[in-house]
Amino acid sequence: MESVGSLKLSVDRPACWVVLFGVLLGLAAPLAAQPAKTDAAKTNDIVIVAHEFLYDGKSGLAVYTGDVRAEDAQMVLTCGVLTAKFAVAGSEMESIVAEKSVVLINKLDQTRGQGDKAVYTAATDVVELTGSPTLETTQGTLVADVVVLDRRQNKLHATGHVRMKLKPEALKQPGLLAPKNPAGAEPRPQPKP
Image 1: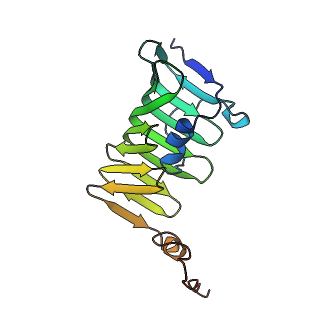
Image 2: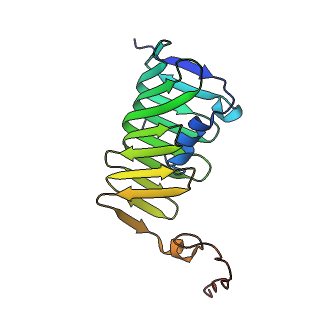
Image 3: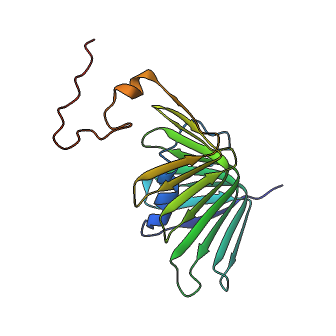
């Protein structure tokens, strides 16, 4: 009989955790991973379920392995291995690395991101998704070799074999490829039904 370990973290919503999830661009759809019953939707807790957990206080590494599922009120992350690096002298998060069949789902806007690896660096507020990364939103799909989101600059950068498939209605929305209303510009006329 296999036991499933569970660690429930009550935290003051560290930006890095919300960032890792929210960042990979508001990602959502049904999960292929085994669902876990959590109460994260009712609290500000982050609930992490895995087969194994290891924390090394000297190195500041927390490692979750085996059908990892991390969930809070807004996001769900599933992967094979989740490693969080904390500052050795304190509890501040430095980075989060999710590996092996990474799926990020944003419960709020129904978008989804997936890839082989996601790396969040707190100091730069940047997330990098690699290993056949795909981002799916209600407006379309983005595929590339590497997808980088700089949250501070509000920039998304995709490199290597970039392919974007947009739904027709996405092109009608202001702000997709241009500002919603550049200074001095007249509002774009809306098409008539």
